[in-house]
Length: 455
Image (tube, rainbow, N blue to C red; front, side, top):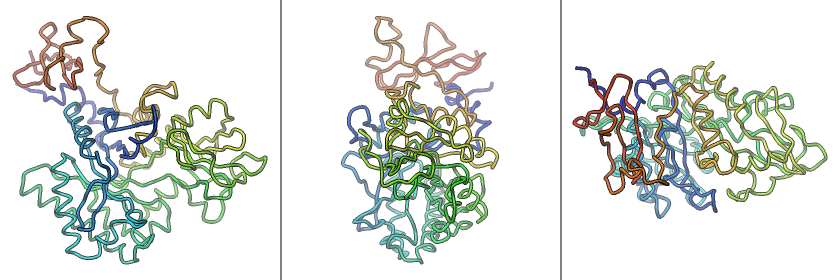
């Protein structure tokens, strides 16, 4: 008798096979919890079926070369995030380590000696296992830069090799699933040359998040798009390389396999303060527009802040770069929308990349509060454009009536339960909410195995 597992019962495993080579990796940041009002985001806001992987940022490295948290309540959020794997068992989570300590990357003091790298690696494995993460994401910006000596390029390679071997050894010794190893990497050609031994690190990383954004910003004297797909007509000098096509092509030319490269999708735009009557691409600018009311940082707006601006602004499309911008008064913002996301996914597929990564979940309209496009409009459109199947229907049963189904999970532990009224369906209880799932056609739910099986 053929038995289908819980994953199949959720209707996820079989339908995901045809996109198994594609990843949709989504970052969340632990500082988004401090944004005011509806901008506040925590791990509890994550849709467990939206992304294939979720990366929690950001951990750091202490003076003892050990991985450690950066926020007082990180461990609470670790539990909240990783509990979502009880809802979607194929979701994978990673912990990102990086940032800066006193203005310097914590990697610099750790990576220089084999014994300090060994201490970090040992602590990372212990920390990841203790908090139920599936892997580690390295966010060093960048080896050989910002106070980091040139030899850190080779030391970064050594760290990655040693981490990979340690993860292999730990999985063999414990018989646990091997931890994933990934990295966020730069997109500018000089950074790539100075920071990475591309072919060597690619051998040992499960996937590589290329940060294909921040190509232009308020630091430039003229307006430019945050994440243009191609070179623009106004680009000259080194700016001809400030685009996604150039960056990904350079990673490929240096020996990175396409299937390990993930295209970076920003859910924010870069802003400028115009300094003349011109408001086109390449118009003179002098610094950033005013900070957004929720992100409260001059120079960029979250997508949910851009929505309100675009409603009263003049929006334009940049044909040769396949991205939009909008202006109102002296404010200018280059951003991404559904049209540019679709264009980028088409390019990504044409180049056979391994998938996409999103910076960040917390800057999309995650609750659907601002843009009237539903929750996570950009990331959902990205997911759909990549060809992922519809997410499982897991809408909580209504709680505004006395329908006994709606209250089935009240007081029950999280888990799966049979629906005695309809054996082709079953209930999932999660945090007191009742979710109704349907088995694949021809199957019924068996409580003995917590699975859908033949009748």
